[in-house]
Image 1 (cartoon, rainbow, N blue to C red):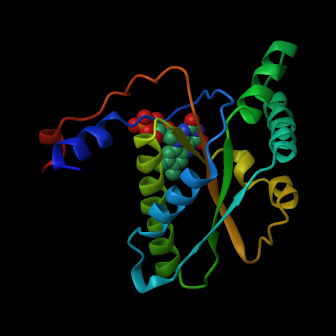
Image 2 (cartoon, rainbow, N blue to C red):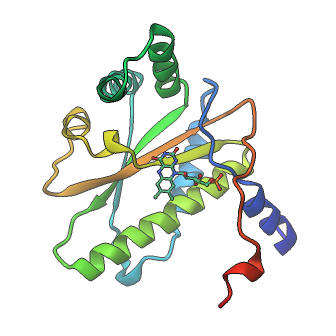
Length: 184
Ligand SMILES: Cc1cc2nc3c(=O)[nH]c(=O)nc-3n(C[C@H](O)[C@H](O)[C@H](O)COP(=O)(O)O)c2cc1C
């Protein structure tokens, strides 16, 4: 790949919110995981563990999401169905966790490494016409989510969900700053 096509891949990638239900082949997930693992990671702390959701777990998450959303406003049946589809359609709903450590500086660097790792994975998947979304909404850190995935909160922190799947329409780009705007 030349630098121009790498730049095009980076600029073309978008966060995808709506997925169809086409599954991602296991070998693509394996390659994406290899890309994840080649992220820079200070002191090679290997601060990550990933869990994939089963269809049942996705359906349960959808019910949690409906419960959380219903606290803010009454959801119609149509809106509830939309939440269920949103959770169950994407091929993969990956629970991204960070191994806890007592050193504040290391924890920050570990989180940075996970961000780099996810970006590697997201870009690789995008090159395969697969969309992703990193989400960090309240459901990701709810006790119920820890229980559903049997995650020991004293050892692992959920730092987000990675949604991944095929999609029918590419989202438009949010407005990005111009390169000259950020150089002081
Ligand atoms: C740490 C982090 C947390 C995010 N959490 C959410 C989220 O909870 N919900 C969501 O819709 N998008 C979430 N996003 C995606 C961003 O909103 C998205 O990247 C941004 O809108 C820019 O769009 P783009 O990725 O297409 O450039 C998150 C992104 C990051 C890096």
